[in-house]
Length: 194
Ligand code: S6P
Ligand code: ZN
Image (cartoon, rainbow, N blue to C red; front, side):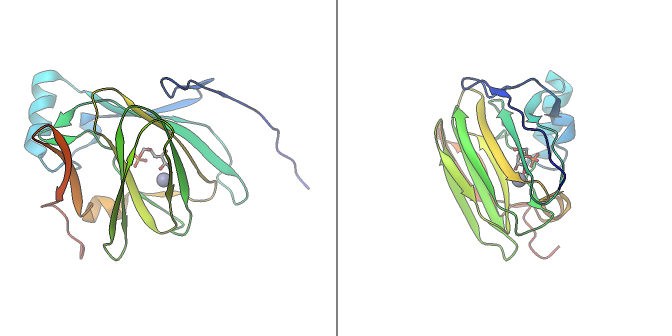
């Protein structure tokens, strides 16, 4: 039997930075075209303020194979695009029946989930929240506070990521600020049948 070497990394429990840093995926405004409901606001901010950093994912490189686990942290910086909070793109796992666990590290966030039949769920997250994303649910997280929101995620190595289905249909609800509060409203861009 082939063995795999054990290892450890250091997770900064204040910031979510995972060291040693191997690979950081950065998502900026320019990577988020047509992801937010207000595409005009996104374009305006990019033009007037520059290419704002929305979130970063610190990825640990592990074999994308059955039996392994993958893990990493996500840091979402505070802010809005129009009235919508900074949020990740969101994805299904390529193998739809692969679950995931999220552990809140810092800041305030909201995890939203959607199944292929259009059911929708949301869970608020803060430091210490352990949220379970069951098999077959697309997921994305938004920062609903004033500080960076970071969380640790762990998922099966062979899960894979499918962004296409969500790019086509989007999520049924979006996280916006209304009267200083985070609320979920119906997404005008949601298209279940596409
Ligand atoms: C991976 C896990 C997270 C996300 C990250 C960014 O299965 O759910 O690490 O990759 O939060 O979100 P997204 O949708 O841009 O990959
Ligand atoms: Zn995932």
